Length: 235
Image 1 (spheres, rainbow, N blue to C red):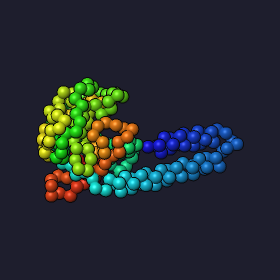
Image 2: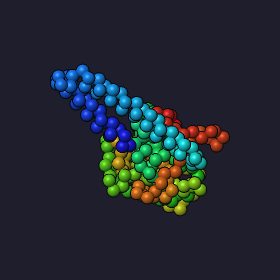
Image 3: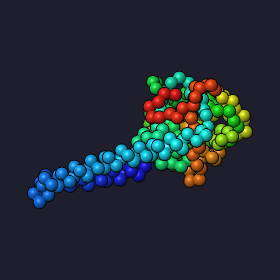
């Protein structure tokens, strides 16, 4: 995610140069032309770099993903996730590289039922982190995932995070099937508002410095083709 910051710096520098060109005759029209060419070059560079980053994500995400069903009732949308780094704040995190955030397409995203999207064993539970108000940001630097459940599968661990405090109904060691009730959606951890976060990783619990992301895909049923979701897609 370093590119947008670099772009911002370059754009500000070029804008300042162009502004000076308007008032300083020593720079004048040639300077304005140079500024315009540089700006166009940065826009072109960014376009192709985003394309490269997206292609890298898609290639990695297609390698043996853990196939999940929807952990939610009703229609929800991807608010962050997928190949485009402009709409995926997880792209800069090694543990959450393939992560998704979901919000309800209509209505409140807080206190909604969350069920197991995959069969497996409960590997870790965190259930004590406080929630912020549903539409308020939450800042928990010690426990960014807030309350969460980790499900062990043959391919890795599936994390469902930012759950409502005290709502988790499973314990470590429990075996769950697809659709088994787990918790309620909440606004715990570090968030911009109530939503459900889902990602796969190679370790059972939160460890941003060491865990590596594992690809996940979603299928409507056991016979449907698994899909890699993108920003704005409905689940």
